[in-house]
Length: 327
Image 1 (cartoon, rainbow, N blue to C red):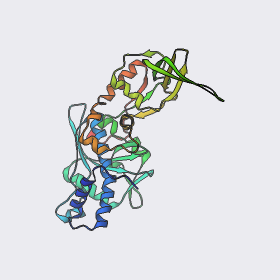
Image 2: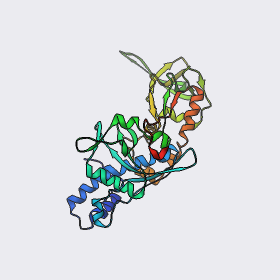
Image 3: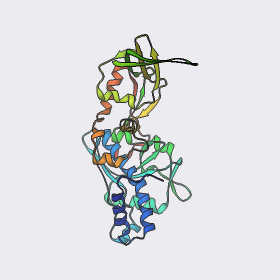
Image 4: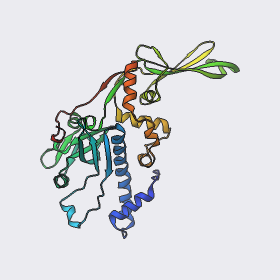
């Protein structure tokens, strides 16, 4: 049995508003399921935009249209967002949020035309936020190309024209090999000894007497800010133990360097701190953003790690085709 949504009442109410209060049970159940998939995706992207630092405002657009016939000509996108530009100006855009596991996202001609018609009506750029493999792309609808019938965009082209860095403040970084966090525990008292075929098992009372970090040169670092420490919660670290007569030390280190987008780090850090199985409940973070606020200014933490040698590269990704509204 699938888990019941935590805000089922809200989903039911919104479904009834969209379908009408006389909706049949099957229609209502189908709409609730669709909203439970779509709304969390919008919430996730909204939080990511706000957390990355350049977004001044993002909110959902009410998609209950009137008059009734307007739906034949216009498709209201999911979000409206305003981003601060480096020159002091603002970029206000419309965003349609999508999840597509295929390599190509395809829009039917009428859906594509209605989205563009709404964008033209408000004279605002229309962007598509696409999630695949846990990676978000934000790309202009102008990047879609007409195939035989539909308008298509490959994930490769979306990544090449991703605006999430230049518009919202996303970036990628690489952790240095050997960078890690180390916890040393002193043996205080031997409690029990069990002899087995595999060897001798000892139980000790222990006290943690040291916690330190290392960079790519295996240099010990002790004065690392709390936001800089979050980088270790975003990475898949390898666990190892070393033993001496007096201490046991747990080493959590990076054994292989690769790139990670900051927006992906947010998901990993939230998952680590919540220690909950399953997907993150993004809607709850919209209602109470304490956990998000605790890891704000993440870029400053990564820059601190760069100076310490824990991070060895920071990349700002620029789109191959810069939309006219960003020039």
